[in-house]
Image 1 (cartoon, rainbow, N blue to C red):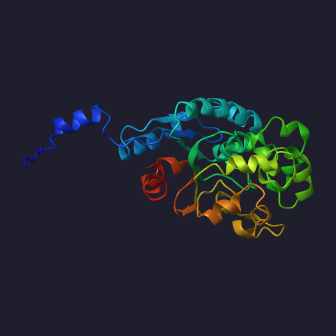
Image 2 (image 1 turned 30 degrees about the horizontal axis):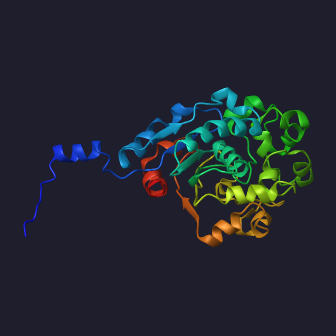
Image 3 (image 1 turned 90 degrees about the vertical axis):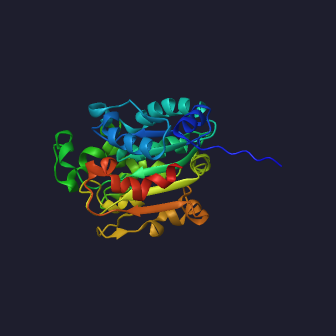
Length: 292
């Protein structure tokens, strides 16, 4: 019996690649944070393309810089329309990698899009359980620099309809006002019951993997454990994810994901907030394997 063999020369390899013989990686969609834009993902895009050649990477060009302070539901709607079109062209599924405020925008669209095909949702240093600290870069938007007084601005109808950070400002000392006035985060968390809770939970649970990334030296996300769904109680002691009421009651599916074994937590010390998406160590340790 005759056998046939050939040497995999660079020329042959190139022909195979051209013929589509390489592994097909799912498209990756990037959503930026507050006061930022798609250009901030230049290095991260490079990391992805080098690790997974041929990957289609889209940094959504929407609500950039000053416009990123628009109210959250408006951004969810806008990003959702763009991302929906990308998903329709990618029946095999996509990965969603969202930085900072972008993580909450992505939570919003994952909850409200009934037919999304997101495989991995990677939240990169995002205030998923809320924010209780004003970063220096946002002080011009908040005349009240003391965080204990920000509720006076944020927990009003006018600012809930105009400033994104007010939509996830979570003052542990003003719980009643948070639940009364905040029109975004308590709805996502199911802390404020509404008629779409069951549908939103079902939509969110369509993801196959939830990847949470953050670290103690972030210096912007406050508390930094919010990146892992931890948050302050009224004594400003951090309560971890599994002790949060929204986890215990499984109001939006977090406990279900955990029970399925589909939550990955990656903590990385020594990384400042603006460096997460340009840090190669973070990419290699926390992101790369979820984009296969």
